Length: 128
Image (cartoon, rainbow, N blue to C red; front, side):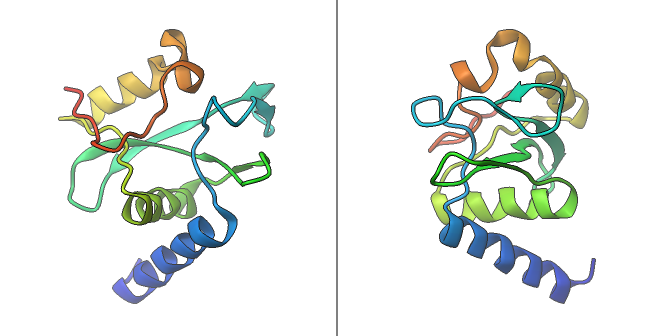
């Protein structure tokens, strides 16, 4: 993706955050719903490098103000996560390797997932 396309995608994702209020699952507001992944879901995480080259996990299910979930994957999902961090001040967990980030993502459900622990936080997390 060239720089112009990247900037345009980030701006569009930023507009989604502002206009539609898309946010990660919040157990105090949202209830698990089926988004086509085989049953009720709270989040579906992806692993990639953040814009600074640090591995991180981010959600691919985003919830609007009315509690409707949207599965946003691929470049659009990545851009949504980066724009959300930039506009909300929230940070998704960072890791020292893609392998550690993948491991955490794959095992998040086993420790209660989004219903127990929100993926993002105001201060971010470093999980090595």
